[in-house]
Figure: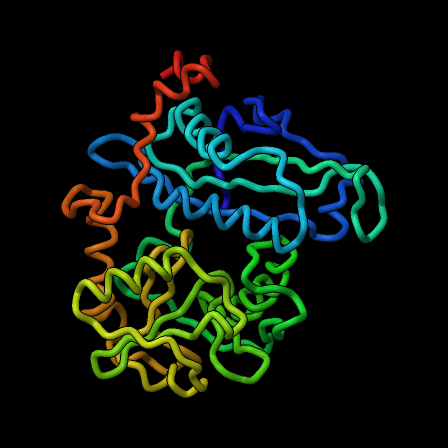
Length: 325
């Protein structure tokens, strides 16, 4: 899905023009995948633009950098302010935020030394439904692909690292070449892992099942959101290993993720899910999730960061941004 360019990007502590946000072709991350990143949704709400679970996303960004021993030159508060600034400065009411931390230009050695600086960028763009607007009700057709997720103690799945997504590209690409909307991967032991870039849930006899973190999955923030919302709705949620055929016997299946949000799955490997699209549990969860941004449900968990409320704190660090709003 093509993105629409914004006016400004935050890079290494400054707001710069979109066209000036470049990197050197010998940057370490370009050659070795030494980058970590986040995807964060900013929703249009009755109180203005609001980021969903911003603090948790930035915390996971730092966790990913810690796993890969990438030094962080800015603190979490600065990066949250950067997220706010690129939304306000670009005049966006809703956006997809992409903070990325990567090893820049320096040595070409595989293990980056002190001569390789860490660069930090935060971009904000307008981006619609990742798997398509119609999929939110009708569901997407998925396929289990031949590509598996990396085994434990090979590539750490809990880090949201750029190199990890080569796996996702193979999974999604194979599925789409065969006419499906998205791919599903198994873990090294042949059990269900996750989608190409999404976590996975299935419903069976009123119980929600999802693979555990040990199944080579990313510990998704939207996944955690769904687990908590489902519990509030009285649904039992079980995290357990599952064989592939559970996908064929499910009453409902849905993907979760910042990009995918909560998207139902209509079929797997040509076998139609019993609900035939969005089922009742998926519908309940979508209502609770999107109702939070639409103002129909209270923000009981404090998940929203309203950027309009940040203007006073922006005044000192980013006076140009605050004055422009």
